[in-house]
Length: 359
View 1 (cartoon, one colour):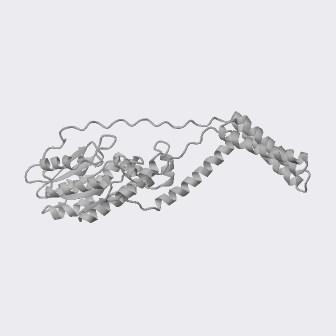
View 2 (tube, one colour):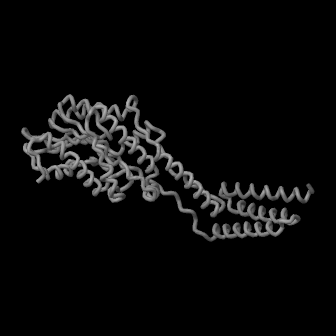
View 3 (cartoon, rainbow, N blue to C red):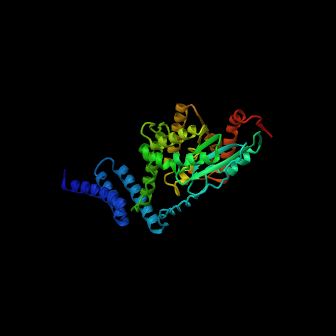
């Protein structure tokens, strides 16, 4: 190899290295100077060969792309700044006295035992369920009372106190959406990574290509995660253990218990989730955790021979209309949730309460 040929090859390699290093380091001029050097070296290498015309065309195309990219970098708009997520306000302190009055003698009571969402509300406000149950004419009449705990899923001692106060015939156990973080902590495989921001880059076109490749790889991983059916280990899971304690506490009070499987996360609509991830980077992890939570509750209910009501299909059928964000129900979503629960309870109430008919 001649000295001139060696110099051309060194220039080609140096140009490629400067382009890549300058792009990744966000050094604009280094990146584009390297791209220009690479194009010139490519034309010089091809010139003494039969591929001189193809080499010249390729070099011209690369040089033109580098020039366009440089123009975009100089005159184009700067890359948008990363969105900053506002900190979540702490949940209101739990009141010492439950807001609902004890049920009156001679009335059948339904106790909604629920965790508190980040907005301070119950996932299933008693007022909504009470309005739905009022559509049934029952003798004795039905009361709907609630106990909302500070934790996503209360403990057996809190439930025992509520049972002693309200003497319900039926207990509905429902977790708040914050339980999803506990599920993810127990199953790290559910913690689908949030999209990684692409920092400053030397090439605007290179940044677009890098983002496209990253998104393609992420979508492939997402499809694989959706096809994986994971559930909490009933032998070691703290979440399952707390559900089990609530079931046993209800049985000790001679109350029937029903586990509610709430719609804790929006359905796997790719476009909706992608749009939501700007404000909620963990949207996909929450969805996977919601599915694992539902599988675990169905298994627990089966082991104890009790009912588990899955309201997700009814609520998720409305799409984004039922959710303010991927992990929080909207007002319309809560209404639909209450309607789904009341419909599922109608048959059970007809068996438990004599003369219970729809008005």
